[in-house]
Image (cartoon, rainbow, N blue to C red; front, top):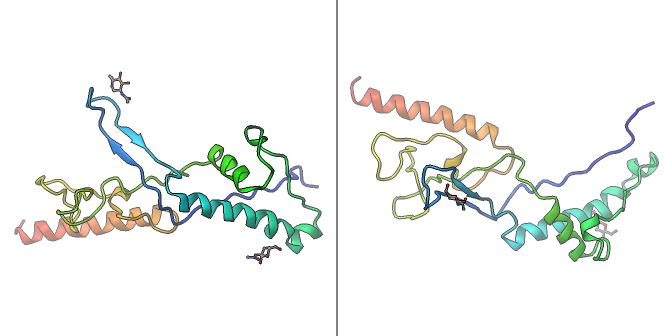
Length: 174
Ligand SMILES: *[C@@H]1O[C@H](CO)[C@@H](O)[C@H](O)[C@H]1NC(C)=O
Ligand SMILES: *[C@@H]1O[C@H](CO)[C@@H](O)[C@H](O)[C@H]1NC(C)=O
């Protein structure tokens, strides 16, 4: 017999519209950078998650395999959201705002783009606009987060950076 008797369903939003930003502390630029994730700042993200919770409630939790195995959805409302009718949009909004996290996929803070884009940091060769001999090669250069986990794309960016650096040095005859 299995000791554990609970299944958890977790929603992941793969195509995120909300964007945060990173900045320096203007009174003390040598202190930690200030990171503002701005999660859920775009209504589209919240609505997609509400749809996801409704799918869990109306469809997934009623699937044959769960019903056949006597697995029931725990409908205990979140303590902080008890004032809303369970499973209403307002309830999900509250529930989501207490359960949101980035799952470690922060990216895009040094996005690639043309020099006339004030939000772009690196050019297509990963060189920082306006600064000589500085490239950035990690997940931060993505103009838009990939639709999935960020590890594979980080490796691809690293590989590409290696090629770009080699090409520059070979061209310079070194
Ligand atoms: C900025 O740095 C100062 C001095 O270290 C600190 O007191 C202040 O809390 C920082 N500001 C923010 C928004 O973290
Ligand atoms: C989910 O269940 C609802 C209510 O039974 C139904 O109207 C809807 O079509 C289902 N959606 C999917 C994606 O299966």
